[in-house]
Length: 55
Image (cartoon, rainbow, N blue to C red; front, side, top):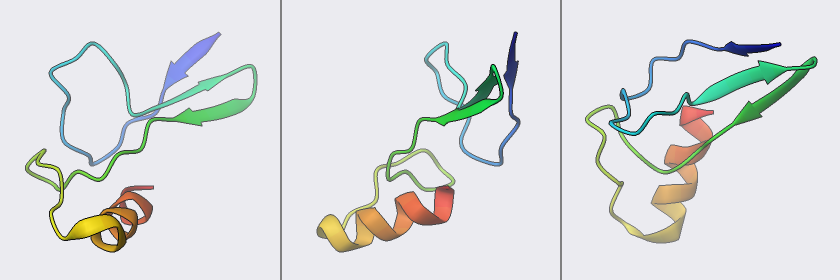
């Protein structure tokens, strides 16, 4: 059974959930987006930081 995990991340236009629990395992889709749904600028360090904050 799959269960979507609600997050505070930007609501994607694509038919996906940012996190799902299935068979006791958490799967996430993490990308460097801010609260407005825009990819963070500033290079790999800024993008890695945003990805970890989203997680």
